[in-house]
Length: 505
Ligand code: C2O
Image (cartoon, rainbow, N blue to C red; front, side, top):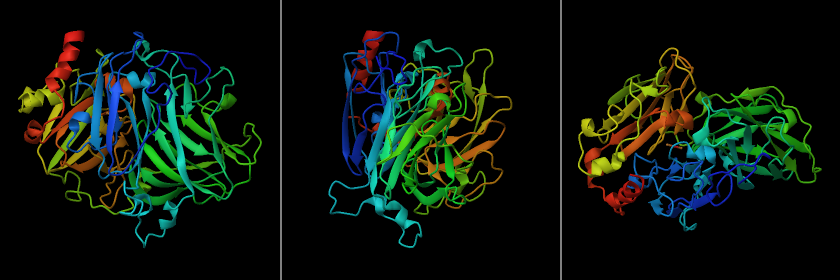
């Protein structure tokens, strides 16, 4: 039982807290994360499975975590050892349950990969590796980078009993918040000292809403997007004391630099949801507090000034990276158009006319047991075979009249170049943003991204609104099937699903 917003409810937690404990590592580290299922409350899902969002899992597809894609669910009384290396990634990630809508009930938390390799004598901190000619290089040099800000939607009902649509009751920043007409419960306080420069890591661990994020009186200089360093971009550089804002969709992360150079005082940190009845800041809902050392311990009285929102097309990777394929629309080896719609009768989500239903066995297990032809793989119509060493272009479009947008789409096993952002008629093949969750438009509009098939495995591509994923808004890319068939997971596959099958049936 926890009451993060003053309303007690039963929750599904990792390590007993919401959000779950911060998992930290260094670039190059090997992670051994043993997940023991001790869940007992049958008003929620008691099986589980955990995904390490944003990590590529190269060569360890089996440790990726999505139930029914790479594994059977873990059942109460049993455990699963996720055992993988993170050789070449550093930045801001997160982890969450990837079974049903379980993470909405609490199983979600941050994961941070520091740039320092295990032996710091080897190399300088990659966070501080920058192009010496980049005028923004100083932005990577901060006094403190320990602050993580998680943004979450929170519900007063359990996910299995959620009504349709499921509307959240409160916004939690670092696991604390208030609901409308609820008690004035504690808010998260972020302490800073005047004159210092901070790297803040912002993680949307949302199940559903987007948030417009801002800090009164302060600009934010973005330096990292979804685990990739980007050229420093100060949102709202025009207004000196202006407030800048950025929109996070479920699953996205940003690091930004904040200069603590305003008056010693308290300032509202705002995460305004873009849907639901909880908009605004009545009784400090949707808020946390930025407090300077020496300021009184009281609520801020600041107002948000007009804000200049982040535009995705203004983001560019710090290390320029050529987009694979030809710099024209449909210029990849494989060009896929995925059209999204909602079946009004079944209320299931469709991609190119088919919904993702739970398959009879995890897709990985199907491949390992000898099904190598995509037409043999279940669920039918949702599995796309991708040959190795190809460039893939994926375009996402909502068929006219499709509700629920914008939909945040996440690809496992990769990040991607966003060559056309929602709401843009034009393509950008010149150093576009690299990320692992991208927004579709709300209407008949294209979002297009590219990646290389350099990672064997069945990888999920799905809407990160957990209610929509549960409603089938997903496909699987079966990448390099012959190589998957040769992979040897260091665990007894049939045994794992046997425990599940023998117990659950
Ligand atoms: Cu963060 Cu498939 O998810």
